[in-house]
Image (cartoon, rainbow, N blue to C red):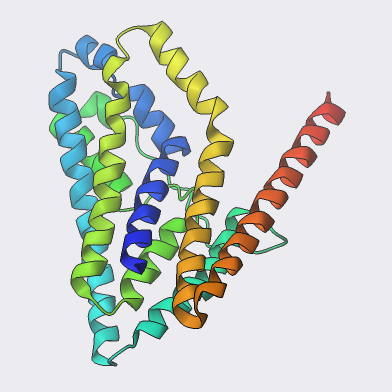
Amino acid sequence: MLVVVATVLAVVAAVRGMWSPCGLSMLATMTPMSERLRGHRFATTATFFIFGALLGGASLGGAAALGAGLVKLAHPTDELCAAVAVGFGIFCLLADSEVGMIRLPAIRRQLNERWVEMYRPSVYAGGFGWQLGAGLTTYVMTAANYLLVALGIASGSPWCAFLLCCTFGATRGLVLLVNTKVTTSERLFAMHRFLDAHEELSKLLCIGAEALVIAVGAALLVGPGGLLLGVATFAIGVVNRRRCNARALQHELISK
C-alpha cells in the first residue's frame, strides 16, 4: 500500500514543479508558438523534453536504488519503511506548511535559458528535461521530493526506488503537454493566469499527498487508528497555510 501512495506522491510532487521558476520558465519558453518562430516543431521539442525528463528521473532513481540496495543488506522490515513514512513524512509536511523554523535544504538553481539560443532542440529540450526530471538539481518546490527518495531507499527494493523516481521524471516531462494549445500570446497569458490562480491548491495537494503517506504508514504500524494521524497532520498543514496566506496579505496591504 505504501508503494501506491508513494506513486501518488511522485506524481503530485512532479506537478508541483510547474510553479517553480524553472517550471514556469520552461512553460513560457517551449510552446508551439515559440518553437514555430524558431523554425522547430513543438512535437519534436516536447519529445526530447519528455525523454530527457525520464532520463533525469532514471538518474535519480539509480542513486535511490543504490541506497535501497544498501538498506536491503540490513534485511529491513516493513515496519522500517512505515516508520520512515510517518517520521520523515511529518517533518516534510510541516516544512511544506511552513510551521515554525522547520525547513529542508533549499535548492535554488535556475535553468540556463540561453541554451534555447545556443543549441538545437535535442540539446536544450533534452537538457532542460533531464535537469527537471532529476528532481534535486534545480528549484525544489516541495519537501515531497525528498520524501519520495527517502521512501524509495527505505523500501529496501532497488526496483521500487528506481521506478518511483522514474514516475516522477516521466510526470515532470509530460507536464509540458499543457502547452499543446498555446499557439497565441493570449493563450500563453491565460495559461499563466490559470497557474497563478491555482498555486495555493498545488501546495495543498502536496500537503495532502504527504498526509496520505503518513496515514498509511501509521496504519501499518498501529492499525486503522493510525489513519487519524494523517488527518490530524493534514488539518495542521491546511490551518498553517491559511495563517501564512493571511500574514502575507496583511503585509502586502500594510506595504501599500
